[in-house]
Image (tube, one colour):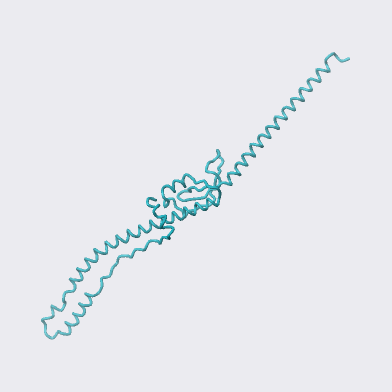
Length: 221
């Protein structure tokens, strides 16, 4: 017959091998499930970030971004959704410019568009106000220059209005010539002096809403 205890030894070794294989299979399953949960969580988190929007700067102007302003390692979590080159940062007041550069968090795309609309109105008002100031400065410069030219021109006119018939007044028989010279002198005296100064262009017109915003633009640049 079989040696005593040999059957029991075989059964115990076989059971140990099967138990080890089952343990490894369970561990592999748990690892796969864990990776799936982590991957699904990351994907879900990324998808959530793409439902978020904020207002920020893109170079020298304003833009609406989709995503969140932070990045995750090598994964970029935002992109430009709408670029607003017409809203230049230099025309925004310092406080608003700083908020845009730090990013403005909003609840959704609609609120982001409302915010950029407000910024566009403010920047437009400040830009027009700046253009008006420059136009007024140009007008003052031209007015000052024309005044000096006018004084010099009036002196020249006075000197040129001397009676040109004086030299011929003592000559007999020249009454017709004296009359012609006198008419020419009067015409030259009354002729207006032409001006070569360019006329400055008037500044842009501000709407009532923009006029209310202009006081905020005192230190935009």
